[in-house]
Image (tube, rainbow, N blue to C red; front, top):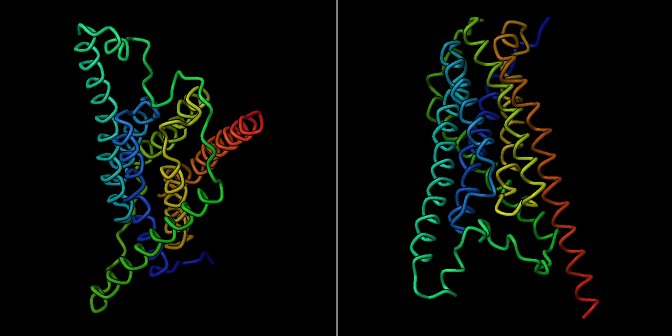
Length: 280
């Protein structure tokens, strides 16, 4: 007999997943703002991600899936749009600034913003990298994750208290071909979106890219899949949610590879910094 699931556990994991996804974009949006550049991100990565999120949301609505999926799909789409706006706004801002300074009477000033000037801070300069503590980076990730998980637990507790006297019924799921097609398209898009970002990281060395985007993405996707599985292991339930389970579970592995890139380049930078110190 198939495991009929634990709705309370599913709700708990769902709220933790929502907490992760509510903050997943914030570090990258802040990173872009501080650098006044979005060039650490691949435009293809965000654009494909947005299309995937729209397909995901449309399929979830058609199939009447659990609220977690619909809430997240709406939020993702809005945040993807914000990141794209940032990228093109900072490009437009830089181009306008460059055009103004190129017309300046001060050659030294105008040279700072010619066509060869870097789009990312530090790009284009053969400078010695600053040594960064990997243990501090790891501690920062762990502390941020614990905080977000805590927020998810609080949200679940509040939700449970609010609905203690009126338990909600589980929505009736349907296996509908249009929602399934959209779901599988979105799963393929989520996987494909990581590829241009991984390729871009080879040239940017993950400069301008917030690793927290991927730390929270991994945590959000993992708890998201677990919330679906905790609801039920009934064949009909798994079939209705199959595209969302596959899309989220498989992207975790690609996000782990991006984190590997980030730490690999930081370790390389630390080795270069150590070598520079010894040569002085």
